[in-house]
Length: 142
Image (cartoon, rainbow, N blue to C red; front, side):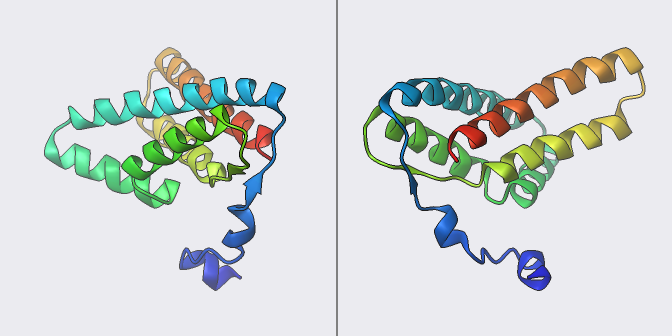
C-alpha cells in the first residue's frame, strides 16, 4: 500500500468516487459550502495568474503535486459538484482531503516564511479557514 501511495496510484479510488445520496434539505447547505470553496480556489487561481512566470509555474506545480490534480481540474470538479447539488442525482465524491492537505501545506510554508508574528497569525487564520471549509464540505459528503 505504501508503494501504491508513493506512486500516487489510486488503489480503491472506485469506491471513493461512487455517488453519495444527500437529502434535498441538506443539498442546499452543502451547495452553499461548495460555492464558498470554489470561490476561494478561483480567487487564488486568479491571483496566481498575476504572478511572474517563474512564481506561477512553481505555485501551480506545487498545487498539483499536493492537491493531486491541476487547479483547472479542481475548479471544474467543484463547479460540477455544485451543479450536481442543484439536482437530485447522487453526488460524485471528490478527493477533498487532498485539497485540505494543500491548505495545510500552505500553512506550513507560511510558518517557515513569515517572520512577523502578527502577520503570520493573520495569514494562518485565512489559510486554516479555507482548510476548515474544505473539511466541512468533505464531512457533509460522507
